[in-house]
Image (cartoon, rainbow, N blue to C red; front, side, top):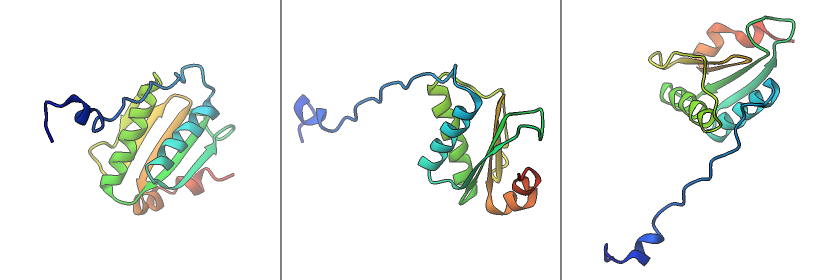
Length: 131
């Protein structure tokens, strides 16, 4: 391949994705569902959205997901942050980036918890906040 041939290079370049619509005016349920979609797109397991109405004042929804490894937990967390940032929303706080078995992202009305399987079982948030 001739590097100077622009026609050959054009086929190799990936088109830039258009910027998605901001979610700045989205309600908490929509945000939780979008986050679940992002997690599903990166093959998170056992994704659960829990309506927290009447259970706590810290958020309206909690999104729980399991990664298959510590590396997967980190990549899932990074993906959610990346996708939300593209939609003009940043977490108020993030924890667990160095932990590798658990990460939490606080989007005010939506809390995102991403665990390894063992860590998810240990904390038992599914049972704690079950309907």
